[in-house]
Amino acid sequence: MDPQHIIEQYQNAIIQIATAGGTGTGFYVKEFDLIVTNAHVVAEDAEVTIAGKVFDKALSRVWYTDRKHDLAFLEAPKNIELPEIRMGQYEQMHDGDAVLAIGHPYGLNYTATQGVISKVDRIREGLKFIQIDAAINPGNSGGPLVNMSGEIIGVNSFIIRGGDNLGFALPVNYLREALQLYLPNKGQASTRCFSCGFLVTQNNIDSKKYCPNCGTEVTLPEIPEKGTEAVGAAKTIEEILKELGKDIRLARDGINTWSVKEGSAKIKITYNAENFFIAGDAYLCQMPTDAIKIKPLYQFLLQENYRMNGLVLSCVKQNIVLSCIMYDLDMTKENGAKSFLNLFQKADYYDDFLKNEYNCTDRLEE
Image (tube, rainbow, N blue to C red; front, side, top):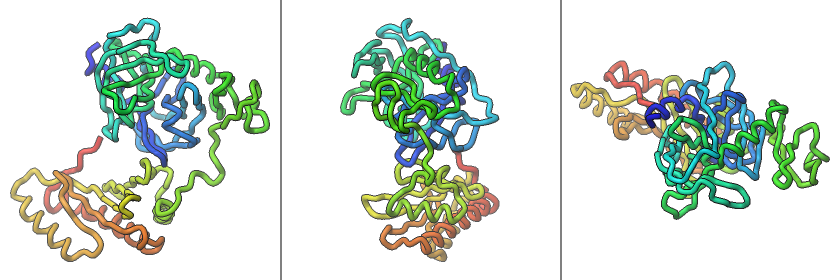
């Protein structure tokens, strides 16, 4: 099958996953109606945010984790039609076979890289892995490794840092075994014991923390009563967002990063802990294609910057961005809420105004 056709086939089945600790990739398996990803992508979270080509950001329950095989299964979005992608046969793969790795490395959504299998059965920590030279990077974790027949033959899991395209994928036979093991308990929080491979569920866990088969301490993916809480300046930011009516669980976009929508504007909030500042960037529309409108647009932006207090309009390549910056030591819940509210309201206003008055265009988004 042509690589372009494979990419087109997979795009709607590839899922973006975000937690308070980072981001990763997942993919939908229609046969089991579950999203597959790596366990290290979801970490200790029992609820994560997901987004895809055909649905907006939503919350998803983590139902199954398997630390030994680095697998996790998530609840699929409701009432959304996602494509069926097939699982292949690992036993039919050979060294030198061409493969595609699909995922979201470094936030570059729906990136596909092509390569070959360097070694089909590389042994690491007692498990077989498919070693590939297709480039995978942070953010690819949990995405599918696909053969040239368009079938999943592995789950992209890790790289050797400092190596030159040394990537490793968990073979699909481990994935198929885990899915079949979990299927009778679908809808229950479950984990596979790292020591003996026994499936531990809410119904059989011993003393709420031990595998009933071998006694190893295990953790079920259960949502805590208070939920996951940030600390320090990040906690203040989340308190402000909550006060302004935003769902902080959906807003989380990785470590110290949040994104929200206000009207037609998308706003990204970042806490730079190294330099002690919080930046709010509202990505508005794009520059007009009509050259006659550009000069008066620049004049308007400069005049508005002179008039405004605490906000700055700028052009980043073709995007018009409205920004505010606060230092973490200066930010309180009260003044932070006031600044964020001002940013949100002005972002929605300027996005519409610039489109109407200067023929600015909608911003391109993936």
